Length: 249
Image 1 (cartoon, rainbow, N blue to C red):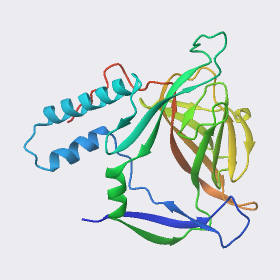
Image 2: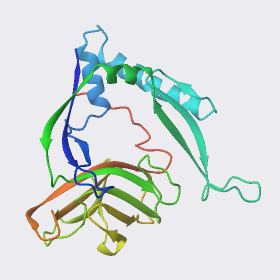
Image 3: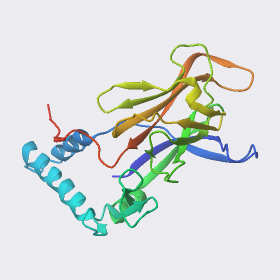
Image 4: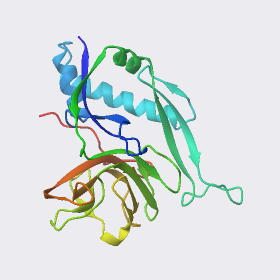
């Protein structure tokens, strides 16, 4: 069975050519590990949900352990390799200045699914709002990782934070639903195609959803109701609680 991705044509904010278009994904929604378990259970493999959860959790733990012992990991789904960040001073590792991250690249299984995927263009949205890229200005990483107390770059379209609605602004929502809203002065560059944010210095390690909410639509008009665009971001080397074993209801 073929896969299907849907997208809207939108102006490319990187160029001035009005005929230069990109395709912006129409999201189906958010899926977490519980969704994966549900889909696995629906395959009617005969496995109990407890077995599926145990095997996947074990798989995740072994993959992480191999990576953190220097293995270049090829799972078929992805290729991953650990990397170091930061300048070494005095011949010593300093957790305050140095860190570890893992670089991921799609592998055979994903490439095979890409070959079986159809793309359906829904039409053109001239004023579509989207986030296409982020970058940690300290590390140069574009994988969604942020450094507290440092600048974070967000690129896209119609992102300029403006409007009188109280919902307008930039917020970070952690995995437990706790929202941290950035003060306006932490948005140092506020343009339709790019934002530069100063990430709060005390932000705890973990996974977050960065949401930009605005009434901006063009230079002369503001929307009556605000709209939002979101992207997954991360602080630190680890995420989640000590026991990240999910519960299936």
